[in-house]
Length: 69
Image 1 (cartoon, helix red, strand yellow):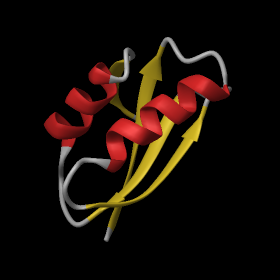
Image 2 (cartoon, one colour):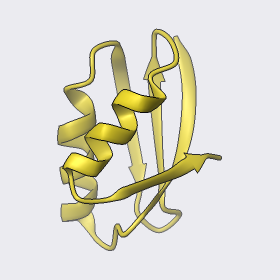
Image 3 (tube, one colour):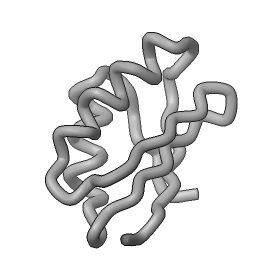
Image 4 (cartoon, rainbow, N blue to C red):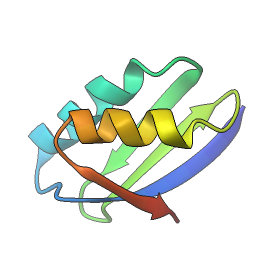
């Protein structure tokens, strides 16, 4: 497994974190998810690089993935 951390804009509360978690959990190969609203980050454990799929899931939740940290 590989840990990847991404910067996300627009998150302000626990509801935001829950929405991002719910959408990213649906990405194939994602094993573990940690969202830090205060830092504006999403850390995922995956079986490989899934940047495009993770970005799409974050967008579906209503937020913007800026890039890797």
